[in-house]
Length: 131
Length: 388
Image (cartoon, rainbow over all chains, first blue to last red; front, side, top):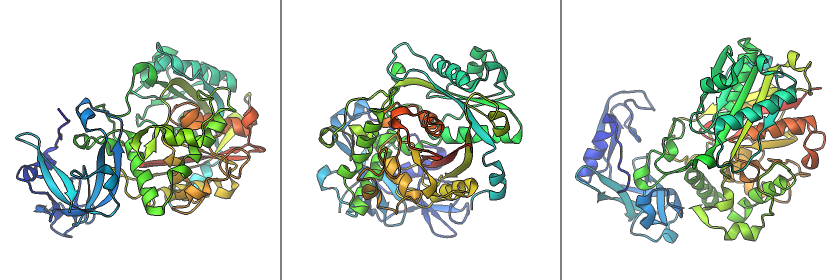
């Protein structure tokens, strides 16, 4: 089985939203800036007030790599697979996989949208597909 | 400007490396990091003319949390102070800087920095489900996407560089090919067979766009340095190599992910600090020792320290400029890519040997200043100066 997320209590709402196929991040109540990964305080304005807020689910491809060597037995069959950095339209950069695309077709700046892959009852993992 | 530059300037040239030593480097199935480190320490002590009993500061490093207390127990010494900082190669600069501060502050008189690495013997993996220490979250926070290994983080950097500036793998190849030429002049290096562009380009990808020869070796070995204050150093066996400048700048924001900024906003601050402290400019450097876990490190170090502009390193490194005999020789021992993977410690040894004129066939003529640069989310740099 592939590794599962190990969530701090602070990060649980991210995964609870993902369970119902919603991509949500903390948004600062004071300066409205979204943040990822989770933090108890806003790195921009230091406010500790925030609201988990649904994102529109689209973003652009910033950078990506393709694994040709497998470091996890559970990923052996996935080789070669990509790992990507995607800048969501709300600002933060997420780490993810881009699926339903040939690795050769990945292109900087391409538009992507989130989909959810159900792994088990607890975790649905956000991934991205071409828009 | 970072820190208090006047206080830093007062520390310039006040501490020195007086002894260097290394064990044999290679694959030793029965090796352990302590034995390798102690072999290196004996050679470094012999090199300096000091004895084990002179050590009153003990700094220890090695993959897998090599213990400074256990090391001291084996050596049979009770120093004033010991330290460890298990951040892999990111810790090498910080530990040397810590030794300088311990000496300059008067806490200790003679610091031994001892490094043991039995990664090959232990079958250590730099990726996969391993224990990851703080500072390296960028390669461990997203295992569920299959993201792991420092190499993948560097592959992201190479991709960003290629995509943003139109640079090419054939240009990046110059780094490992040049360092292999240097290693072939170094009797102690592990890799001695020539590396051609064709061999580089046809080698397998590990994490694309990085190929096999963009990656460091994994091997066993030990390294040791002896540092003391400059006034004491001048009475010892070899000409001291002075620590003229230190610089550091960390980047914690967005550190859970492979960098998307290439540290453009942070690394230049370490550069500014080190040149101001040492009172010299980058054009005074006779050679660079650049932390090269991956070839792309050289490009980012050159660009972010102002040797060329962002995006220009692909072109800058061509036509022999970074080779021995060129304008700015880099990693004249072969570096991690071809000499040995001692996480930056042999880079310090090479800097010392170059400044002493002990580098044999790979000697940089009349070397006076050598700079060490380690890029990354814990960026450190040192300028070493020949005593005049």
